[in-house]
Length: 161
Image (cartoon, rainbow, N blue to C red; front, side, top):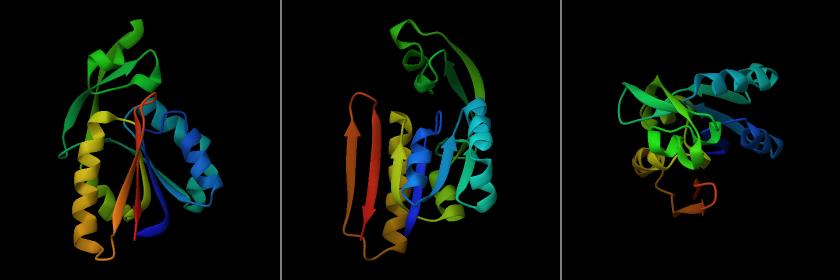
């Protein structure tokens, strides 16, 4: 586990990524929406250059596939599920996004100290792969703590040893 590493799955406008960096963490910022991923690359260009931030333009999925993803008129509602993207009278349009298994991202960047996931559907996949990786790579793991913010449906996992 990398004690200075945080994963931000569902970057949106990058405010969480900026907060984690302000606390001294390196951040792997994972975003399925190409427009928001590009905005993150622009916002964090200096930090990317220094190696403090890595922007991964992908959705978390079970395998390397293209998948339908709904871009909402409210970007915080972007989703694999059209109904979620259109809640509260929002509109959406479909795009195809690249999916990557979480274990591939873990292999590339390392096991994070903290994992924030903004997508209900990606939580299960991320947790399954993180749990498998930790079980294989960290005999000192004692607990994983979930914090769920029901208003935002944001989940976070803090991995402790």
